[in-house]
Image (cartoon, rainbow, N blue to C red; front, top):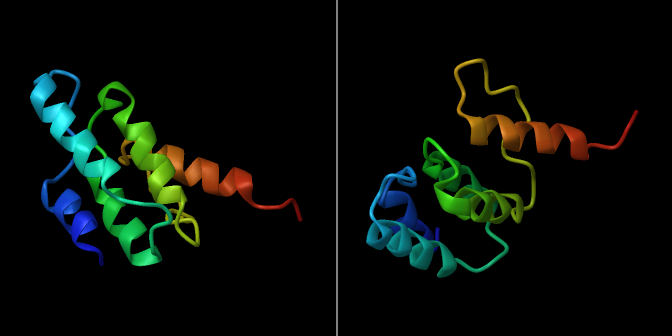
Length: 100
């Protein structure tokens, strides 16, 4: 796993929208340091970094980074207790599958 991905994952989930501008900017810089595409291993690790809300659009950037990996990460239903972003990733993976 690349060091910039390790650093992002080690910093934990994205903050919520009540976080300071400095904290959100720091996470944006970390995210911007990760070039696409990510590996399957990196995508799986990055899924743990979604926070409680959209973090002013940063969660969308994270979602697109995760989706740049070679395979969908969340193909199994994440369950009723899953967060919004995990459900969104799953739904997008399911909807992207070709019709039978």
